Length: 310
Image (tube, rainbow, N blue to C red):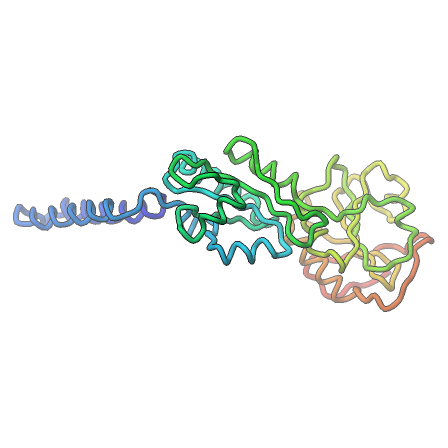
């Protein structure tokens, strides 16, 4: 029985127990107590104990029609196909919910109940299930979204636990991030540019997500700590990483994103900054080059709409 339902039952029992302990309670109330207990028992019997993913779980249950819409969207998704009565599916529920909460800003989290007649053919084709019964194990599948360069969905083969599920999803996040170099920097500007200067060995997940969301609008690049020439060119302090700069299509003057000290960058904060800069400096009417060193960068907070240049 899921936590949402049990919470309701607990409140009913607590209220009932409160009345029993009240000074006004007497033996004539026994019949009332019996009625309440009978009511609770009927609730428990009537409830489908195998139901998974309540309204507060953060995991959206999909119909066949809704699944098609998700599969054709631009955003990446993680979808679980399950049979409610299966013991492994029940054990997976809290693990999948926790994984979903950790990944919610990066991709969409869904589940498909394969016990419904309308979804069984979908589960057999997408979940690669031969039969649909209580012995059918749950299947988790990653869909990269139409904005990705690759179209193939991938089935998760690891253990049904939160951390490996998260790791799988992060590894599969589509990325349009360009590894920035002096050569890339000297190319004619076709789109506004956003560069992430960082010291990590891998591309951060939020930057991968940004690259998919901004595809065709902003050229997304990353500059790692080894690219010292670019750090020097854009006057980036390598002791204050990560840092993001935005370069408009018609201006060589970069705008540096201001972030709170000792706080990690998040997808939401970066989205706000880039959308603001895109609205203010995102024109692509003119093609320019940035072969000469840029002027001193200006700074902007994620929600800033105007900046002062120096």
